[in-house]
Image 1 (cartoon, helix red, strand yellow):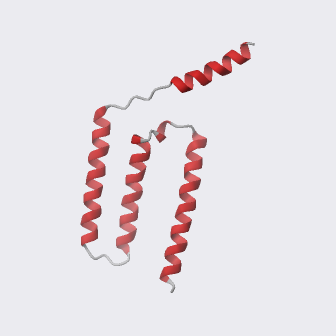
Image 2 (spheres, rainbow, N blue to C red):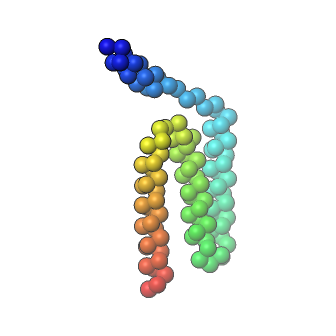
Image 3 (cartoon, rainbow, N blue to C red):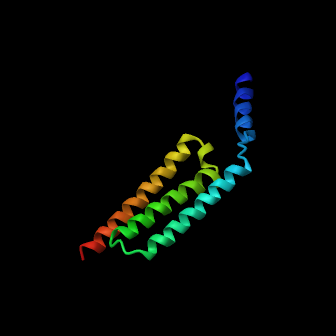
Length: 106
């Protein structure tokens, strides 16, 4: 019986676990997102050749990491959840690489 109480207690403590992030952090992340958006728009105005799309995708990746970690609270999730997200991102990256390599060799 004590085993059952311990399991339910740990589940309740995890469900009740709150991760408080201050408003200052949210504002700094938002300012970072705005700055990265400005960099993306600025980079689009210059002609860097084939590197332009790579720069834009890298900036978009950083922005998505910021949104995922701070606004979606993914940095407080369990490791297995982060592994699932990483597998999805790697699969997406492979599809993007295959698509761009197909387009470049036509």
